[in-house]
Picture (cartoon, rainbow, N blue to C red):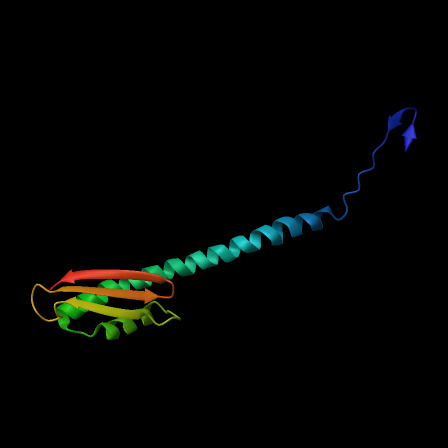
Amino acid sequence: MQRAGLRVRIKDERGSSMIDFLGFGLLLQIPVLVLATQLATIHANQLAADSIARHSLRSFVLQDTPVEFTARQISADFRLSINPVVELDCQPDCTSPESILRLQVSVGDVRAISVMVR
């Protein structure tokens, strides 16, 4: 519409809220939510792996408890859906004094290592 040299603009903003919702709500916030969930899972698995490695090796040295047994107990306490993989390496052996014990624990994609001298 034009009147005597003046231009009148009619703004129709119907539908713009739907575009904002799709643009910001779905396209940006859903990937952020997925990323935050994955980071929380990785962090929880790392805490569990560290705890399993530390306590399993300590229990093995102090009380001769098998590392697999302690690892199963701790993974149950953390309510892990993934079974931890436990690898014990002893130099020269696991029972003699001054031997170096190295325990590596893998929970999913994360790993933790604990080292102790008997």
